[in-house]
Image: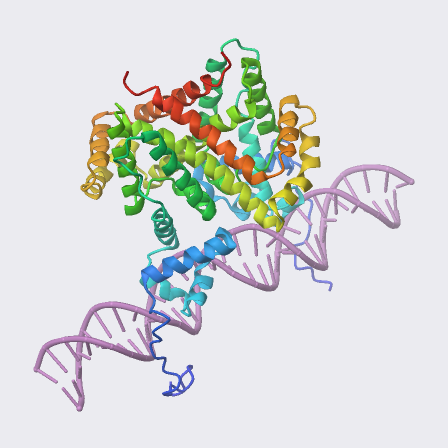
Amino acid sequence: MAARTNPIPSVWARRQPEPDQPALSRAAIVREAIAMLDADGIDALSMRKLAARLNAGATSLYRHVATKDELMELAVDEVFGEMALPAAGSPDWRAAAAEAAEDFRATALRHPWLSSVLGQAGLAYLGPNLLAFSERLGALFTAAGFPEPARAIETLLAFVIGMSTTEAAWLTTVARSGETEAEFIARLMPAALEATADYAHLSGAYTAAAAIPDPVEIRNSKFCYGLEVVLDGLALRLPR
Amino acid sequence: MAARTNPIPSVWARRQPEPDQPALSRAAIVREAIAMLDADGIDALSMRKLAARLNAGATSLYRHVATKDELMELAVDEVFGEMALPAAGSPDWRAAAAEAAEDFRATALRHPWLSSVLGQAGLAYLGPNLLAFSERLGALFTAAGFPEPARAIETLLAFVIGMSTTEAAWLTTVARSGETEAEFIARLMPAALEATADYAHLSGAYTAAAAIPDPVEIRNSKFCYGLEVVLDGLALRLPR
DNA sequence: CCGTCGATGCGAACACTGTACGAATGGCGG
DNA sequence: CCGCCATTCGTACAGTGTTCGCATCGACGG
């Protein structure tokens, strides 16, 4: 028992708290997790790799976070916190709602892994940031005079989530290919056209889309079109 | 080298093809995978367990399926095949579109794992069944006179996917708890009310929802409300 | 009837994963 | 100075997806 398995503890080995490397904390863990998720996608995040980036042992994380799923919930709510709270007092409810929707989309595209998590956990977990966001959205629709503001929220969010999820998944696929979005489309086009050869409407839509040079612009206008549709439909629910 | 690690091969050990257990095939694998996914959720599906249910060795599956991800893509398109193709010739485009939307939702709720996969892979993978579905939807909107049928499809699908994803994720959470949906809600209510104590609109919405006894009915009417909103918005795009 | 060949099945192994457990350590209150 | 408690972390376990190479089998050509 005399011989320790560790090297002789010396003054030099004793690590002193580095002020720039703030001690392990829930906030630091979540922050670094988000950074890894953004950089390398959802599959690249493992507790071991995350711990390594924090200069910590793998199992040390569990002192601050119960489980990996819980860490994900925290990460999700954290990025929801990036969204600006909808302006509830605005006289122009349409503009305010559109802004909130676009902010949601932008956040989802900035963190494409978010869609994966939403697909599994949904909005069931109510973090404070999402809670605040929904509340303000409710205030917005109530102030606008909607008889069923909750329904309006749900409808708008469903559209935004559906659109952003599809878009984020697409961007993830593109990113995995290592190519530009335009390159990826160009490479995929022949296969897509062949697959849709028997389908008049689909192949027509594909060739039409291919004519527009900038894929980003296509996606933007897709989103705007749908958003206007939803807002128009909602406007019909306003009294008088 | 003389002693084989296998037991002495005898006539009795030699397996004869059982006609009711049709040989390993891609179709059989996909079918069984869907059964497992439906029964126990997405986390319960592993190649080994799947193989065991097929009375096969784990790695035998890879003769018929390149990768687990590919298996998932096949499973997704397979369940898309359960949907009825939208009636393209119908004079009432609204009814036909609504029917397609509800069919999509029903399918997503019958296979709640679908949302998880969509969140990761999106609609990037174009299986023949989803292709056919989209094509018919395109025909429907074209016949109805929409100037931009592709946009209409995308908008409708975004809403349906968003709504179904959220709903499926919720149902998965409920299922994991082992309780009825009503029981689960009842147990969650105090926490939800406390969490939303500071938020007038949210807690109001919660208490209002709690008054309605049947949670299924709430979800149905949520979906219908949003669907009507989207269809109303689309109708405005029809010429004249 | 035998020999060969391609397709199929599968056992073992590899590199990882999330996480439970218990031992070590360090700083702090008494 | 002692004892305690929060924190850290090495080890271990039960899995995971997937690769490799070998065994086996049915069909077919000679």
